[in-house]
Figure (cartoon, rainbow, N blue to C red):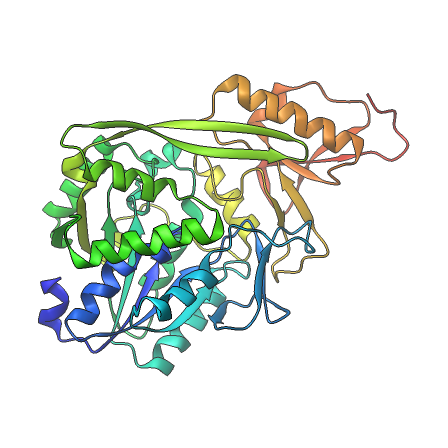
Length: 411
C-alpha cells in the first residue's frame, strides 16, 4: 500500500467492482487505508438480476445505505424478500467491529451507465474524494475479448471499470485485483498472461500478498464469516481464498452454482484450477490504463441491453442468466418483465438442454409469461404448437422472444 502513502491522499471512495461479495472484501483495502490515516467511504453495486427498495422507494442510481429498512427481491415477486441481501449486515458490522468506514453507497445499473456515471461524478464532488479505488476479487474484470467465453458475471465488473474511467473530474483512480482466479471465471494461465502484459505496459503499480497473519486479512475473514453466519449465504470466492492460503500446490476445486426455475433445481459445478503463486496476490493497477487496453467499452441504458450486448460479443454468461429482468430503461417492476432462459455456455450440454426444455414448457403453459432465449439455442428443442418465437427490432438478432399464443393448443 506504499502507493497510496506516497500520494498523500486524505479521503477515498473504495468501490467493490462486482455484485457479489466484492464490497465486503473491500475491507482488505479500507483497513490498510485507515492505518495510514486515509478516511474511507465504501460503495458497491446492487445485484443487477434483482431489484431493491430503500425505505419503500425503488432503487435509484446511487443509494445511501443507512439503518432504514431496505430489501432485495426479484422483478416477478416484489412481495418476497431475498436472504442473499447481505449489505445491511455489512453496514451493522462496520459499527460492531469498528471498521472505521464513513458512509455506505449502493449503485444501481438498472438505469444504465451514463446516468450512474453522472451521479457518481456528483457524489465524488460533494464528498471531496481525492482518490477512487475499485476492488475486484478474482480478476475477471481484466478479461480481454478473447477471454469472454469463460465469463459468467461480467456486467458489473465491466460497468464499474467503464464508469470510473469515464469520470471527468480528473480524480486519481486505481484498480485493485485480489486473489486472481479465485472467482472461478478466467483460468489462471490466462490471468498470468494478462498480468504479465500489464506489467510490461507499466500498469502494475504495486503488489501485496494475502497472508493469514496480517491484521487486514483477519478483519476480512471475520467480516465474511459473520455475513455467512447471519445471512445463511455462502461466498465461493471466500471459500476458495481460504483454501488456497493453506496450500503451496495447485488447488483443484469447483465453483458451485444453484439454478432454480419454479419447482426444479440444478446444482452445477464449474472446475477451477488455482495457482497459489497467483491467487495469493493483490495487484494494484492503473485503472484508466487498464480500461484503455480494453477492446470493447460497455455503454447501455438498461441491464437487459447490457445482457444482449455482452452475449452478442461472446460472453459465456452474465449475472442475468436464468433470471427475471425488466427490459425498460427506468427500473419499473410492473411491466416488460422477461425471463432470460439463457443457461451459461460453460454448463454441461445435456444440463443446458434440460433447463432449456423445462423453461420452454413453462412458457408454453403460461407459467412464465414471456421469456428470452439465445438465437443459437433455437434448435435445442421442439417448438410447442402454442408457442410463438420471434425477434425484436429493438434488441438485435442474437436473442429471441417467446410467449404462449392465446387460444393455441398446448402440448
